[in-house]
Length: 476
Ligand SMILES: [Zn+2]
Image 1 (cartoon, rainbow, N blue to C red):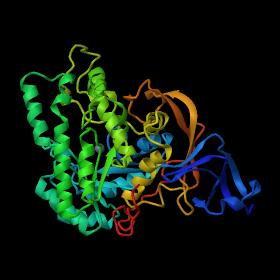
Image 2: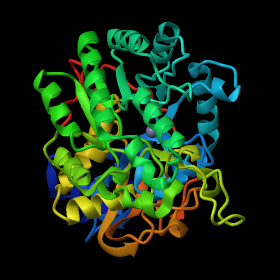
Image 3: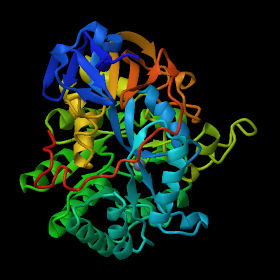
Image 4: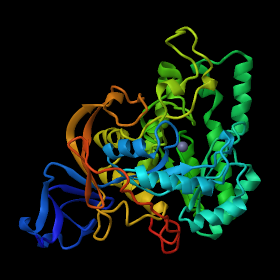
């Protein structure tokens, strides 16, 4: 029996943290990053991993995903792992609209059982509070379960999802009292319904009418309103999937008032435009809609100027056939109404490659900034840092080796989820994750999943470590 003192030594790589890039070896022992990395010789390690020519980064923390459709946590986490993601934070909601009894905390308990058996990656959970949830009962119950973040929809009133403003204020108050964090999908749902009705009445149900039915001003209005409510209730607020260029001044204004306000954007809002909707119709339908090139550039500026804090995927795994309620094969001329198509896209596996290529290779953000917004900040905001999102001694050995020289083409064929298309199809990028490790176990190597499913841990968010807490970690 060997009494070697390290499980792995990752040798010769360029180690990337939010504070900068250093050439150093990373020692992994008992699932953690070990200190004293200078003191190990080759003979001390179970395996030496040659990382020369590679970046060594913390695993990506994807703080926004919905593995509750065709892709559930099993195939979503599989796909995410191949994309360099090591921690996921799915959104869970009650399912009364589908006729499933139970509260959101019941659904969270059910999800944890499913994830314990099938997830490939460690996970925390965000709750979605829908309009029919009893927030007085649910917020304290979930905080006790380690679920400290609560998303509310300001849109989709007719789908039974919108949280009325008075209930949102109550939920923010309850969350704030307990160290929780509110999250919003900021779009004005009544205006969207009004504009969609008008479009349908006029017979304007083609793909070109989708973006005009969900204009930018509705995102700006809702974000201002949510931030105002958060200020009144003194509740930290995280606005998901920012898309419109005018959101930058909104963030600037409320940040100036010393609010705990955080902003997220997604690879689709950084790189794709409404042209995808015009080209692919239902497959490109997401809310908020894909916008224009100027909006993409504004999201990058927001990231580089530290007004936008995170990049997350907003993964929803639908198959092509589930995205549209019509069938091109049997009736190629019948496109159907864009307003009947399903929302969502699968953006997780390509997220790092797109953000690296468009962000770092194109000079829009630095590599340390990428690590801040994809690893450190999401872990800090949701109370998981420094266990996750860090390469410092004592942190979980969740590591990505990234080869910045590999040129490849993104395609649905190469992805590992059930969703059978990608809006990044054909995009050429340089840079690719080549190995991922979680808690000192290799997950993906040589393009193969190495670790069986069901070895994932549930991560309780710690309100005392969250970014806004007095003792919390500062978001960079
Ligand atoms: Zn979402």
